[in-house]
Length: 199
Image (tube, rainbow, N blue to C red; front, side):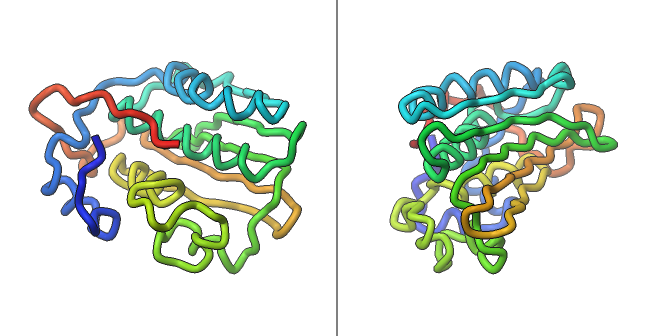
């Protein structure tokens, strides 16, 4: 479960691990399995709006190390966010790329877009840009702020690219491949509980 702490998202990753030491009980994950889990969880909202989902995953046999539940939550948040801000019958594309010792998962849409001035603010649950996207600032651990938390705690990065209103958005998740040093991970000592997805 997500730790029940009023300021949890404001703590740096190392401090979050101290608050919840079993947060990242990690395992080897096949990227295709991770993407499949996130897609299946996201399909109801995508199909409800008759949106087209395209999956380009020729490199999805790559392996990463992480918490499967939390990484599923990460991609689920990005996919449902893309669906929310893409019109009915719009398009969402998932692309997998390898960049050196990292794998990138790109989630692009042809939806509302994000003004460049808000590209950083949307990941901050206290920022005006976060509220402007109706992502629920009163719900700790929700939306893009939670996505940023998860990717940081897996030693990765999360970035957004958009040319502005009405031009669509592209979110890029970058995660270390399995053979990269994992100093950013916090390993739990007991089996983790399954993490329920937060819509």
